[in-house]
Length: 54
Image (cartoon, rainbow, N blue to C red; front, side, top):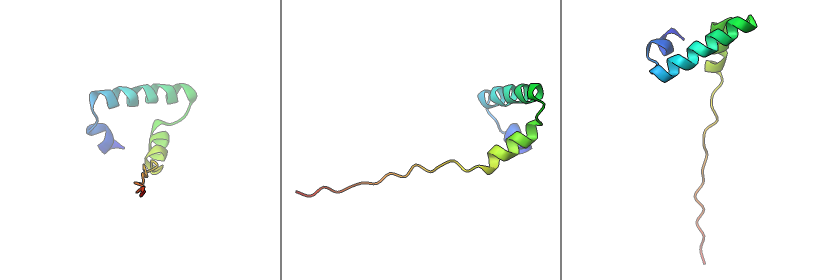
């Protein structure tokens, strides 16, 4: 997570800061949320090209 913060763009830092504020208000530890989201792999976009023969 620290690496992610150090290499984040200004936009990403703003989102992380807002997430940190929200988790503080909810009583959840920010690093637990971030580590969980890092473990969830995004779904890959699987596209197929179909050949149509006439």
